[in-house]
Length: 272
Image (cartoon, rainbow, N blue to C red; front, top):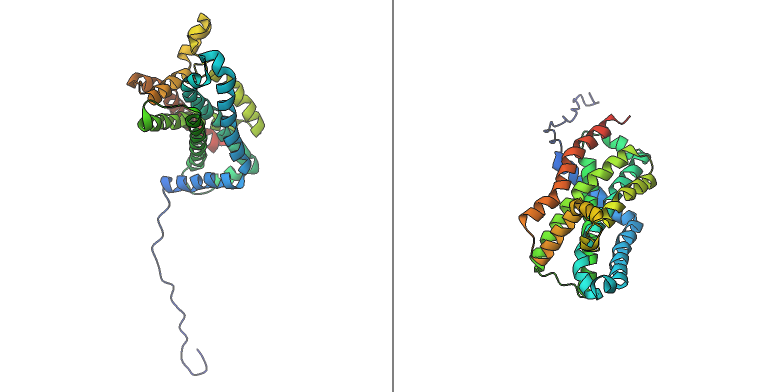
């Protein structure tokens, strides 16, 4: 009560509806944006992302092209779809390295305490992978077009090939996310990752036709998932792809996703 005898009334707080809790898609988009911001704050990743595909494309085309196909231009028609596959497989390692780095800083322990969809932090890693695949693939294709590569299937074939590459990268990414959860240091993740990847990439049909290989090696190359993927990508870009080729190429990413996505969540939730 004031001096004049009137009663001061306090403002009544207005009750409003509680905002709805963000859903899985909203959570995933937030972490996807975090993956985008990493490219701005860690520019050395972009340097590695740009220089590696340029180096591989130019080196193999001009050093090995004449010996393997008679001329660099002829070899480029065979090799460029393969180098796209190789780049996607190599880039997938960064998922595990980035995860291992974040775990070491305690970021994922904080994420786990938030009321969010459990897999949303990994969705951000996968979006980062997609960006790396698209940037590197675009660079390789641009260089190839400048050097004389011509996809016979035109723009639709290229778009189909890139969609298939993203599907492959999605499946491969789970392998290295699991490694990132199990291994403490990013460099160890990279070392183990490339130890596994190198035999699959170089014992495939990415760089050469397996027809000249020894029978025992060709038997492996013919069933190598990387070879099956490369065959499908070549078919997309040349116009000769079949549903069987696409189906065989998708076996590995589908199986890896089915097996490793639940394992990723289990490993993540059981961390102390």
